[in-house]
Length: 201
Image 1 (tube, rainbow, N blue to C red):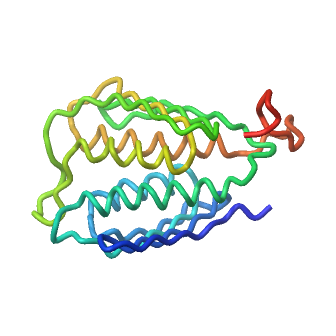
Image 2 (image 1 turned 60 degrees about the vertical axis):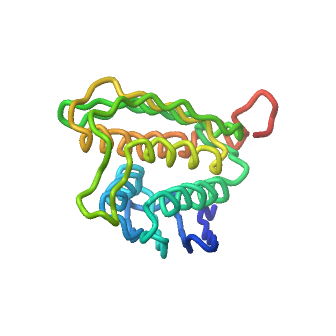
């Protein structure tokens, strides 16, 4: 089964190209123009063992909002397309992932019901050093919400502990990768059936 997708979105604010292989080996080729954001997206690929390529030309002269939001849209669309009709997948995946003092719980359900509950307490206000790459911490939550909507998944994120914002974010993105991997994997006991009492997702 070919669980790959390529998605593109062009607006006056950004051009975003994403290619995704759900059955990859964790190869990441990410270039959004925002170093910290690239680092976080790499964690989804590496810890989810997905092959992900993201190329963005965004209006970073304005700020980072449009670029990060639009990546959430296109990456979410790529996951939705690649997962297909969900026959035989586990559907639900969760993980607890630590990063030093930080600990995140992420639960994913390929439910085809877009919903997110994001519970993160930050200690500061921004990521990044360069003015053109400053990321308001609340924008990380917006990315997760946007991704969930466009991937048509139910997503719960809860940070259980953490004092360093970098560690907190890294634990969340690592856990997201692991949980997406678990939820998208095939379950041999399902024998190709759709994991729902409705018979469809």
